[in-house]
Image 1 (cartoon, helix red, strand yellow):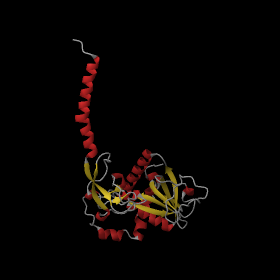
Image 2 (cartoon, one colour; image 1 turned 135 degrees about the vertical axis):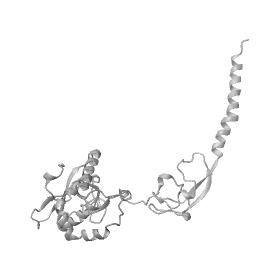
Image 3 (cartoon, rainbow, N blue to C red; image 1 turned 30 degrees about the vertical axis):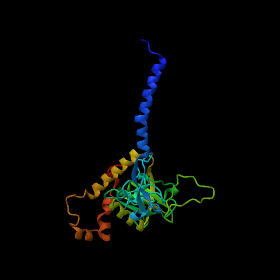
Image 4 (cartoon, rainbow, N blue to C red; image 1 turned 60 degrees about the vertical axis):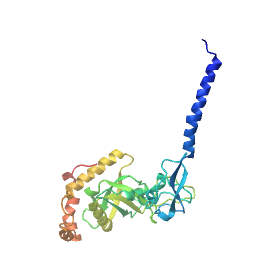
Length: 285
């Protein structure tokens, strides 16, 4: 028996209509009519401010087309910081908040263990590399002191130092990579902020107050080379100062350290190590 094409099309149409009516429509209806609880801003919180329980409220909204990163519990947001200005009625998305304090210097939130961040003053345009330094540069520091028998010295501990930022006399960050506007005056480098070990920080403090520090650029824009140079600097520091014993009580020998690390003993005991002849050290570029 031959079936009529119209009959077959009719059967298919009935089946398709049944699928739409009993499966597709309820699924869409459930999705569009479904609700869930989300956290919503009740009052304005400026960028960098900590979010409190008084700033937010939990409301029930339709979950259709709702971003997956929206906060749904008050405990998820209370106590964290706004990474952008939040206004009443805003939903709190993960990208708009931060678990750590927000600042204009995010690098200061991730200081490696055993390191410190220190700023050094640039006395002249030449000492600051003619205002050409950039964040992430690897530099070498030379010390000039006209009162010493050898005025200019290369310090092994300060051969490879990472620059974190450059600031002007008002403490504002300087970015020499951006072209100036016609009415904009060029900022002058006043301080250079670097990542250093405690031993390097002591030397930088001492040399800055005893003479003039000159900055020489070693590497820029080469992450692999920068990592290698910083590793070699760490090896030099270990050769000079040794590796701290992790099992040793950090308070042990505190009294002896306070006596040994006086200004006179530092200059006598550390000077030979800091300035020993190049032939006795590992040759570094």
